[in-house]
Length: 517
Image (tube, rainbow, N blue to C red; front, side, top):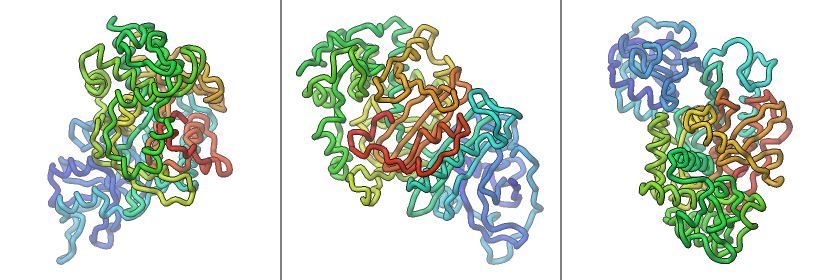
């Protein structure tokens, strides 16, 4: 049960630190007060810290998904005070014994070290932050479960048993917001994965790019039936490629036939065995398109389906030609700022990850399963550009998918275009692909709109039922194992993974690290 620690020495400046994350603190205080705590809030009015000894926290949904632990009495708290969902024990004011450094006497420097993981020594296994759920079941979720997220939790734990360092997940439905994690964010420090941790989302970036083009169509600035050559004359030419016969719509639903540049054998070497040496190199969109057109197309436009990252590089270039602005600027202006996605960024050529974040572990340097995972947290994502460079959080992805599938980002005509799907020819069994989102039927009859993304050391899935009523986002900080489908089946169908399903290894070939799985 969350408890309140009250004492002198707390000031309003603590609020910023506590909002930085939930951490485990070691403190020497009287024996009546347990020595290890996880902070989950702070009252700036009463100078009271709210902490818990449990790895299960109860809290109201925060208005900002990047700030899950609101400061009581501040604008970030929807109720005006921190309400843990049930009364917390208010401990009496206590004095720290002489010579002892208690929680009450901790300085901001100490709390900063704690927030960065120096004192977060215990790995949290399936730690959960959840809102008390209403009776019954949420829309799009199989019924008959007392704990609506027990199967999701089991699926997350299965990923850890399969060898993934850490899993992070958040879901939102009529019952509230549920936040879960399993494993660790960093194998060396043991720091748990935090709700506001940022990570690279890989190909989930594609739907952001698609939304911009659909909004431009709604504004009458382009048509999905425009040829690629109209906006990028002469760019898609060579070895059978011809942009005059490819439409913008065919780029977005992967029926263009344009060769996937990440499948190029030489480029595979850069992403795989040569990653350590080439990870900080910059690649331009023109360079990536040139790689693609040096190969023959996969098929004639409209006569097949094949997932190609080149399609979304071209989509980004068209955005820039139509608007006169960078595609990143358009995403920020049209999506990130209006939705308040505070944890979402487009890094461009910067290899840095904004804080807070964990470590991304990859084994893409070798196809040998015995290869020791490599820290791939920092890399220049320009090779993914409009097809996969974005950094985000589970909270931001849920907010985005809820707004998008809920029809809040696009007019009706463009919403229908978004969700008009084509067959994938069995390449995504059971699934159909729209304009940057896939329609995926689950085993229980629920259908979700989803996309996955893989980039070195990071596997991500975002999903939503129709109307944006039930969203889910998950991230794995390792790329050599894991089962994203099991996580979604657990959340929406209550299906517990059986056997070693989570140990099924994703395709290890480097060209697959940014491919829809």
